[in-house]
Image (cartoon, rainbow, N blue to C red):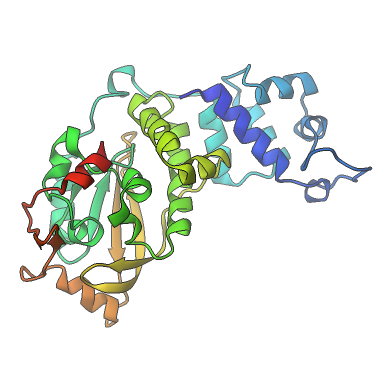
Length: 306
């Protein structure tokens, strides 16, 4: 992934989103383009216009913490955006070369943890938003049309972001699809900065940019968000309309692995629906038949995964 270009794009987007009033400056005359001028950002950040212009033009990397902090203050960045800018700058990046592009594997302890969650749907995600593992409830909630064992085969792993944009069955799962997609893109942007040298992640972004105009438009806006908790509306093919909370538990290492869990208010209809996910009798439709724990992928869905 071209980090100098990504850093320049991020700086331009954030500069364009601010007005002089946002940062305590007087506005004199008509502006040819929206947002702050380069010289205004440079002045607020305490650096030369030439140096700042080089940053926007992608001609300088490895900016120091002091430079990143100055830019974050000048552009009124959130803490998440400031961390993203630091990742894009290349400063203190520590990704070992040997582990950049190899397929991830879920740790056995993490797999046992999600299996033990029982009625709580849980999905283990890798740094490329690929599914490394899920428990039965998680599989049946987010991808009942797929093979339960697919995450164990690197070449056939489902990828939640790819499915969201390229798989109609997944797209129909979210009645508020655009909000869900925007959140996914913002999260992927954060990962792309943190794991800038990962070829698989760059390939995913390239594929989605080519195949999905929606993704290309959202990606170009350079949104950044650390999506750790919130609510999701789902329209499940067997359980109907659901309003669920979600929590993302991040592993305390540099793997980028996360556990995505779904919960419902105790005693609610959504909670009762999640309980049904544990019943062996729950019918999971696929191409005119039923899909159990060891079912097979429909051909169209296999294509969407590749």
